[in-house]
Length: 500
Image 1: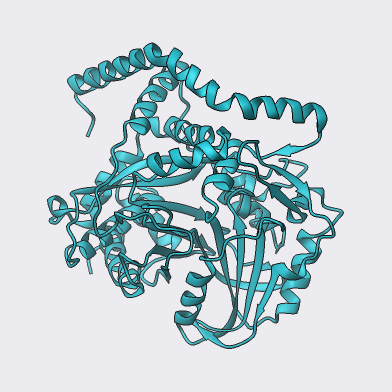
Image 2 (image 1 turned 45 degrees about the vertical axis):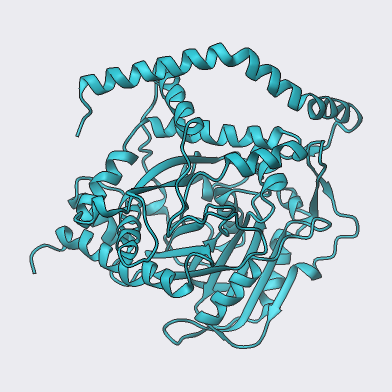
């Protein structure tokens, strides 16, 4: 439904008023910002003169490194058969620790932190890969692996070494009773965002490109004119800056979660659908994307669980959705065709309201999808993604001693963080492992108490969820990502299936 003319005029007036206030306060803001940043800026100039080749972290990477040291991406790869640790570690070394591939020097570099100066990368003296490879030979099933991963998430990176680790569970029994293996790659967010990690992963895959007939994919991103960009930018700035924090609820803790506080996680593979069936359902439902359907199903699952939860739940909760500004096809591009760059340069974020309260209790899965589509079809979200991460970069540019206090106060407004990784839609081997599936996790942080991850691979869909253990236990997560999510997906697919 299109907004009325009065609503458009009202929105434009509010944007204009906010812009005028921003301009009026700009001298004060500039003085405060320059005062806070003058020392690191001066330091950066001096260090650039003394060390012109030093590689500093970008603003977003610096924010993750200085302010959120537990922000570690955990990629989980499930094999079709059992593979020994020696095979995986040997293939990983051959690909990612190869001195002949300059793009992967980062695997042998560590980040240097200072309370005042900007962090930078430096080569690790006498690099030893052995501590980064952890082989687990004892048998584990899915429940045990979930416990192990939840425990691994509590472990911070050793800053004296490069910011990555590789665990390999040789004897893993999956939820269907299949004997196989599981590999867990831990990469600090300061090294890379999800898009960059996926592109890095593809270099160790065979094949590392989709079949020729499926390579081409039309870009569906609409173009935004200069005036629209300006207007959307002001609106996004107002939205992000004036965003009110969610109240404590079943899905948001009142107490800040520390890095070593207990956490739980789980993942579920969609049984009642596939990437193709979701695409078919989306077409039947007016052109909804797979992402729209999955967000709607997650929203419906959270709403239905909240109806049985003892704690009070607000009508809606705020989620931050992490997105990539780079086209999907670049994941498969050669480094000569599209240069590889570490960091978080492609990362964007948007804010979505999820209707989980009593007001939405009578909503069907399709009703929820309509609400989601109305939100995600807003062209202004493309600009919001840039504005939101630009503000995140500002935190990274501040001295750590100053930024940490501000971060804890200002950066925990949402309840849920969500991320979607569209993985390869074709079978492949990674580091000698024939993959059956994949998932990934980033631990909950502060009072952002739940992290939802959506990953597609070779036609399958995996939903992961990690949470603050003081709010939800692993059984609750299994119910949300399993039983309730499956029911929502089935309801969304009914129009595509037709009458039974």
